Image 1 (tube, rainbow, N blue to C red):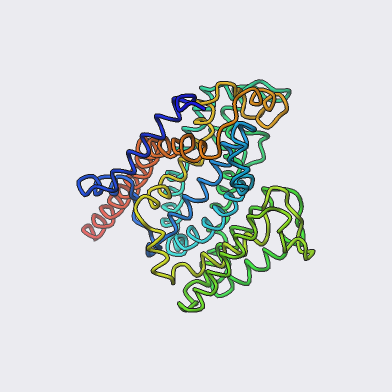
Image 2 (spheres, rainbow, N blue to C red):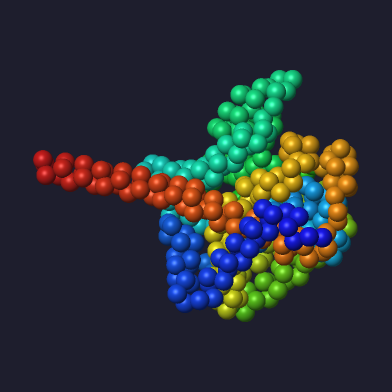
Length: 412
């Protein structure tokens, strides 16, 4: 094993470690803390620790893909840390977080057409710029090819305009599948907030979860929806929980979380005959564990602040960029990779079997940290400017509206 076997990874990881060092020195700490902060203040009170949880979910998905996409190059790492085989569980964790956080934001943002428009603009400029970057990278790396019923052009424009939300077949960037479900959730949420009285929201979501469990089948798209509803229930129940019960609930959720990450053989809910045993790890137990932890965390100040240390918070802030760009990082280091759709097939396994297997510490310490560096670059160059552009457009519209109202009142 040579440190320079993957020069892009080695340099990228070194750059990320250098970025982390900036938090250790007073002269640079303030700078990196400021540039890696949310450019738009939250519409509800800021919750300590939730950025870190989002970063954990993105990192889990990304490092799991580093192992899976190049198997068996990093098989020793997965042997040492078996939970890497369940990296897909980061997606439902994301969904519970989205249900929790976006619902809280929507409560104060959808009382009028103007606020609904602002909600849509914020969501668009939050997710689309980095998504568009990933689509362009897919085009530049040759991920779009002619098929029996599609062409390079049709596939590219379908991805560019996220037509997969309307069941357009296929997509080039593997992690994007969950983003299409998330977009549909963004559209569903305002309708729910406007139609369902808040006093009935918990009951409405619980009924939805039960129905989805009764109708459960092997579809990760269908299964993902129940996690959004779990997040909404957790957001509604959180303010009603006192600190001491919160600690008990958090610990209970953490225990269930650890049990769930031991694999599908420990899916205790499915073994009770409730729902299906999902091979991709989308268990009901994981949703329950996340719901308990997220509902209780806002009431546990010390745990929240411990999770909210600056380097961990930064990883949470760049998590969306990490999630959508990490496959391009993997491809940049492994020229053997052609189409992402071919990963996991026997020919790719044969290709990677001819490469050396690396020690269990190489992936987490030398190869993987570079993912965060390029996530940080994407955040600074694409994601942050996109959100600021959305904020500018909203402020500009608000100023024009205020000026119009003032002019009308003067004439009156």
